[in-house]
Each structure stands twice: as C-alpha cells, then as structure tokens.
Length: 514
Ligand SMILES: *[C@@H]1O[C@H](CO)[C@@H](O)[C@H](O)[C@H]1NC(C)=O
Ligand SMILES: *[C@@H]1O[C@H](CO)[C@@H](O)[C@H](O)[C@H]1NC(C)=O
Ligand SMILES: *[C@@H]1O[C@H](CO)[C@@H](O)[C@H](O)[C@H]1NC(C)=O
Ligand SMILES: *[C@@H]1O[C@H](CO)[C@@H](O)[C@H](O)[C@H]1NC(C)=O
Ligand SMILES: *[C@@H]1O[C@H](CO)[C@@H](O)[C@H](O)[C@H]1NC(C)=O
Ligand SMILES: *[C@@H]1O[C@H](CO)[C@@H](O)[C@H](O)[C@H]1NC(C)=O
Image 1 (cartoon, helix red, strand yellow):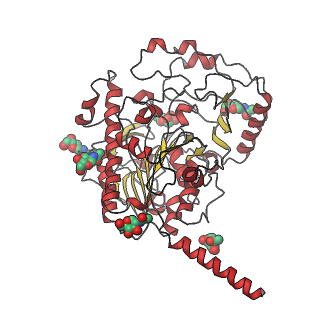
Image 2 (cartoon, protein in one colour; image 1 turned 60 degrees about the vertical axis):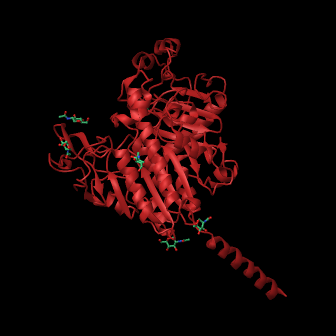
Image 3 (tube, protein in one colour; image 1 turned 90 degrees about the horizontal axis):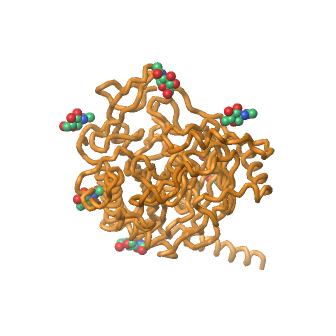
C-alpha cells in the first residue's frame, strides 16, 4: 500500500516535471534605451510620436511604478548583476574611458546564467561596464557575440568617442566600435540607431528557433550628442526648441528601430514565443532635449525624474495583455525574473537584491518587493548646471533628526508609498512641460530650500512637492535605520584615477589596455 502510494506520487512528479520542460522556453529580447525620459514616450502624452512603443506596450503590460538608476553604468550594472550598486563598489558615477575597473569579475552576470540555462546569448549596443582588460569585455562575461560600444557618448555617425586622457587631460578622440573583440572600422557614416537595429535583426534572421535566444539590445539612442538624419526630424517642425526638435527625431528613429526588431522576430517565426522587455536606463537629460515632466529633477538625481523609468513587457505569452502594472518593480529585478523565465538557476551569484517579479507582471500579483534602495553615494557631486542650485543648497540648515546615518550623504530609499532622501539629491527643479510657457511654471527662485532629510508620500505626491518629514517622524526614523543598515553592507567605493596607458593614440580605438 505504502509502496503503491509512493509510486503514484513519483509518477505525478515525473509527469509534471516533464510537462514543465516540454514547454518551449521563451526567447527573451531586452531593449534598453539610453536617457529616455518619462515624458518622451507617446503613451505618457508626449508631443513626440512613438507609434511602435505605444502599440507594443498597449498589447503588453506597461510598468508605471518601475525604477531604474539615475545613470548609465549603475543601471546596466544592476541589470547584469541583480544587485544594488553599494554591493559591487560601484555606487559612485559612471566608468570613464581611462578608469581601470569594471563590474567585479567575481560577479556572475545575467548572460552567463542564461547561457547555463541553454540560451544563445547575444549583445548589440552599448556596454559601459568596464573594458580596461579583456576579462571585462561582454564576450568574456557571458555573451556569445557582441557588436557595439564599450564606453558611451560616441558620435552617432563616426562612432568616435572623445575623452580626456591623463595625466595632462588632453582630449583624445578615438573610435569606439567593436565586432566581438575586434575593432569595427567599416561603419563610418552609418547612423547608430539604424546600424544597431540592423545588427539585431541579422542575429534574429540567423537564429535557429529551436534554441532559446537571449538578446540584449542596448541602444545608443537617445543619449546626446543630438544627431539624427533629417528625415526623422521633418515631422517635428512644430517644436520650437531646436534641442527638443532634434531629440524628437532621435526618439522617432529609436521607435522605428524597435519596430524593425519586432518585425524581424515576427518574420522569422520567433515572435509567438518571445518575451520582449523595453526599458530606459535612467531619466531624461533636460540639458539635451529630454523631459521627465511632470516629475521633479532629471538624470543624475535621485528625484523621480532621475529614477522613475519608462518600461513595459510585451509579447503573445503575456496573460493580461493591455494592462498597466502599478506594482513596485526595479531594474535589479530582471535578473531573477528572466533567469526564472528561462527555467535556469541563479546559482553562483552573490546575494541578490532583485526579486522575481514575473507573476506580478504576467498575472497581476502583488510585487514581492516592498522596499527599494535607490542609492547611497557619499562622494556624489552634480557636475551639470542646475537653475538656482547654489542658493538653495547654501541655505540648508542642520538636521534636527538624530540618526546614526550621516544625513549629509546623498541617499534615497523607498518603502511602500514612502520615499526618504538625505543629502543633496541632485538637481531639484521641476522642469516645465516642453513647449509650455515657462513663465507660468514654478520658477527656480521660488523653490523651498532643501532639507538634509526629506520625506514624500509617493502615492499622494508623485511629483515630490509636499515634504512631510515633520508629520511622520516614526517613518523617518525607520527609513534612516534602514539606510544605516544598508550602508553597513556597502563595499568601499571603487572609482580609480585614470590610467595614462589607456590612450589609444590618434589612429587607435578605445579598448582593453591592461
Ligand atoms: C585631470 O582630471 C582629473 C579628474 O578630473 C583631475 O583630478 C586632475 O587634476 C586633472 N589633471 C590636470 C593636469 O588637469
Ligand atoms: C569618417 O568619414 C568622414 C567623412 O568621410 C571623415 O572625415 C572621418 O575622418 C572619418 N572618421 C573615421 C573615424 O574614420
Ligand atoms: C527600419 O527598416 C526600414 C526598412 O528596412 C529601413 O529603411 C529603416 O532604416 C529601418 N530603421 C531603423 C531605425 O533601423
Ligand atoms: C510558434 O510558431 C511555430 C511555427 O509557426 C510553431 O511551431 C510553435 O508551436 C509556435 N509556438 C507557440 C508557443 O505557439
Ligand atoms: C551550483 O554550482 C556549483 C558550481 O558551479 C555546483 O557544484 C552545484 O552543484 C550547483 N548547485 C545547484 C543547486 O545547481
Ligand atoms: C558626512 O557626510 C559628508 C558628505 O558625504 C561628509 O563630508 C562628512 O565628513 C560626513 N560626516 C561624518 C561625521 O562622517
């Protein structure tokens, strides 16, 4: 009798086990846009037209409470590791071309895990996670193939990046484009947004659909410089601000690129089994045409304009097409989510800060994430000009709050509806809606001085207009305690001086030198 029960039990275990494995694992395509702001997508009401993003997201799930990091390298770092910046020593800034460091080599990255789960892994676009030695390159960190940029801020046509080289800090302009580990010299004049979408489509065309595909497309668009073929700008003659107008053209090109990649998936029979994720890497840069209206701040800041991201998931496999998710989701959640979708295992990673949010996205379950550490960066400086910044920061008083966490430190944390910020969060202006009469919006001189500790209720006040730390001292206490605990787990900041041997010379290309 006992034997019988056990045999029956194992029979069912075997059946359900093989049923899981018989289901084809989905292809996963992750498209990351660069510096794409909250108000730059059509479905947020933008004057910029994004028909492909609107259509794809309307058939999928729009993530409207979705967070990214305020800068390129940090967001990519968390996407690839599933871990907060404080846990990789990369809590400060981006990697500059001559800095000899990369995402620590003992971190196991998302493409390695996808590869272990049986996926073909390809990357097209901008890496920006370090390249001073060959072990740091995408091809050595889990990608079967790579085509793109190792750093950032290249020219869209020549693919040249200019950057100061130590010790004299003379500006060196050199090519930054690789095919695998080789310098790619044959693409001068080819507009990056078209080039990258073509390369991605080629991978799709060559892919054997029996093998699951993981493709990471990290667009150069819509980061500055503001460069775009005229035909994309033509529909925007109604936009008066020349930066915004060019930027709008760049967004249109990127939208077309996403449409082309999706069409390639359809034409090659992959689409019916694809999960496509679209995400920005950080908020828009208002100095270069981007807009996060009505959110406060911009790229580089811990205000919502820096960290609340445009994102959606789409594809025929989603159970609730046409829905909007207001559950808390963060860019560090993709690693456990995608590895889970791939039927893989996160074995070999260090302790993850991300959560598997697949049931939240596909079934509408509550998010397993209640808390989100935006960042803690004791070395923070905002290098870009911010209207009225000096007078508001200068008048900051001492904090009345007693805490073991140093409240002069640039930091922010979210718990449920609460967001607490300490130190200088970065440019704090509400930039006006593009095209609006700027005299009717809050002028920067009318802004309240910043306080060392600020609390906002994100549900009632997503624009961070009403600071409520005095009304909720217990919440402030609790969140400062959480920051203090996080800070105790932080690695020392890694932000080395530039290495003079990085210089590729006038004829060379940026790349590994060590
Ligand atoms: C070069 O730039 C670095 C980093 O900004 C700075 O610390 C250093 O003083 C500069 N060197 C010279 C010679 O200007
Ligand atoms: C790219 O082509 C332009 C125009 O032909 C030329 O002036 C420039 O030097 C080229 N740049 C590179 C990096 O090859
Ligand atoms: C999209 O595909 C069309 C047709 O092949 C092509 O003309 C266009 O340049 C592509 N756009 C982008 C951004 O890749
Ligand atoms: C997708 O389409 C292919 C070819 O048309 C078919 O063989 C496969 O079963 C489909 N997969 C799914 C999940 O519907
Ligand atoms: C995890 O990985 C290690 C080494 O890569 C291996 O020995 C171990 O069996 C794996 N564990 C699981 C649960 O897969
Ligand atoms: C607190 O942080 C600020 C800014 O990071 C720093 O200048 C100051 O020395 C710190 N104070 C203490 C007591 O560590």
